[in-house]
Image 1 (cartoon, rainbow, N blue to C red):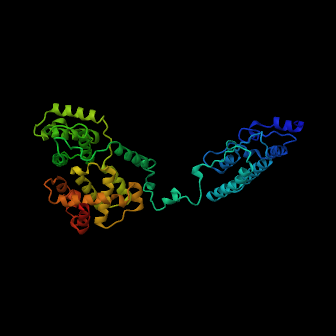
Image 2 (image 1 turned 60 degrees about the vertical axis):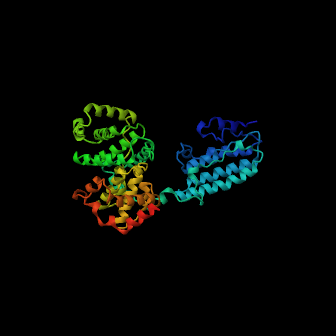
Image 3 (image 1 turned 180 degrees about the vertical axis):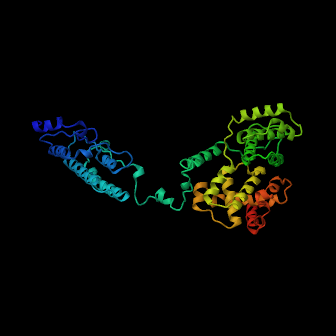
Length: 433
């Protein structure tokens, strides 16, 4: 039977302050003295600690986890009730004490663990479903775990720290943008040896792209336009093969589409008719443009090597010579049929890594590894292939790229002595093995 005083204390009490253990309230009667003690403790607790609990892993939230234990009222075990009271007292002292970040959090979890273990041993008559002892994985601070993410990045420089005042550099979400770009390059892959079984060969493709490099230079188009042109050609041909007499038409039409995508003032259709020496008419180019766009589902957004190279050059703090040499190495790859399967981000990282190694022996730092997502070991096979392309370019009949980077506009980088040095020869010989 309830006493009159205890009944009034419970009925007049605010609903939010009523002691809840899981979903079951402890009845207060003569046979349950621990329940009465619990009620008095809750009534005397200051109201400031009864408010809304914060959400993301604070000490108050862990306290809520500790007290969230459900007890079957049909199974009354005094030992369990005493342990619950002890847990609440420990958590209350932790709430009222000073918080010292991780150290206080660790102490709280340790004290919580110590108080929970005997309660489980004592509650043998309580089913497992009646006791909920869960710790979020994100709050695991055991000594066996690896270093926290923030500690792991101590040697990684924040390259966007000084860009917060420049809205055009979007420093707040630039890392998300590049992460999305890496997802896009996986979404639009080019298969290795995609021309097998077709009338067009890898050599024909190389001749076409070498000629397009000359057209690109003559029209004074942006660098992005050339890379996007090659990307459109490869993606289209692996889905929709064409006869040999249509290959040049695919090339100029792809450059027209890329120009519309990248340029402020794209060349006219008549310009491409003229550059092909009237081999095709305007109608042919327009029809091929519609076919390419339908085949690629109007998806022109595959990222380019240049996008990733600029980010990597910023992360490495490289000078103009290293950046230009990396561009030369990247442009050598667009002609090679055997390089079509590599992702743009991988080519950009390998080109810059090799450029740094050749010009002054710079190391691939933790910052570069973090922002490029490639270690030097990951890039080694591709770097050896780039060295083979450098040696091949010296005697190759297709000279558009090498001649382009031999001009003073590009610092005559293709003629630098480092490209004929021992390091290039050694790496190229390892690729042949």
